[in-house]
Image 1 (cartoon, rainbow, N blue to C red):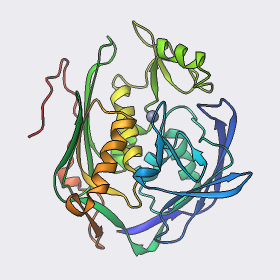
Image 2: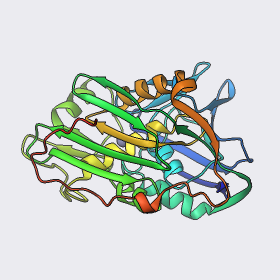
Image 3: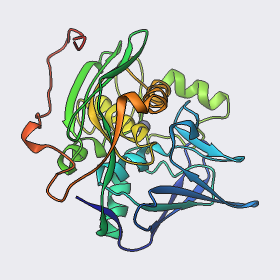
Image 4: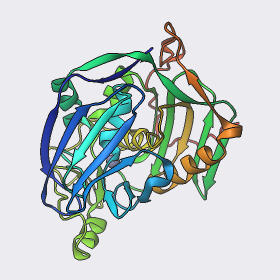
Amino acid sequence: MPQFTIKKVVQCSGVGLHSGKMVDLTLRPAEVDSGINFFINSAQGDRRIALAPDRVVATGLATTIGTDGASISTVEHLLATVRGLGIDNLRIETKGSELPIMDGSAAPFVLLFKNAGIKAQPAQRRVWRVKKAFSHAQGDKFIQAEPYAGFQVDYSIDFAHPLIGTQRLCLDLDREGFNQVAKARTFGFLREVEALYARGLALGGSLDNSVVLDEHGVVNPEGLRCPDEFVRHKILDFIGDMAMLDLPLQGKFTVRCSGHALNNQFLRLLYENRAIYLERAELAEKERTHAPAQRRRALHLPRPLEHRVPA
Ligand SMILES: [Zn+2]
């Protein structure tokens, strides 16, 4: 399996979720073994941020990474797209302090990569592979990693809301699997959104880039893109949050009711203890990133779902 980058430079702009201001984003091809790097163009010059779990400096509202006084917010949907499309090397440039929220999903970024084109590079893909089971829990929230040839996520959520309730989905992160979650939008509850506005946060948030729920249902006039859009978006966020390593991560992940904060705590612990739980591997020519033979179809369980605690 070779490494991949994009064929040509592409750009887009859109509103930032935090500031409500227009922000620009430029994606450029990058050299073999250079990985995914952010370049923030500020008054102090260019600041490079390479991916690492401890570069995550905030997880409220969205995932923010930073270094040396420069930071960039709302990186998770773009990074999920990078991993979902199997991009190994990429230069991500922005002048603002956040990425555009676009429509709250990864679909506009998928389109951007389609415009850029994707090309193989003359080097083998390298990954971090889970070699020993590891789990991390906080109250009801839980993440478990197990060895697996590919990236599989089995995610369940449980919200006390008539439209959400318990939702569960299991998928493999190949193109088909990523398609299942790419269009799922960010969601929030009206009472929380009002509280955020009052604090001067989420100024770019609107019904154009998030699903907003009141006590009874969806406020957005167009409704949901699919009934389980919520768990699909949670998987998208999880893929993006697990992308904060210098190499793509391989493993089977069972996740219950997690969020950006727990995702990052989990990844930090996994990476800090990498001597025990992870191994670096180079994917051989015939080895696929994903394991189609083991792929399980999307799993929709009737509500209510009993919480299965993985063995
Ligand atoms: Zn998200």
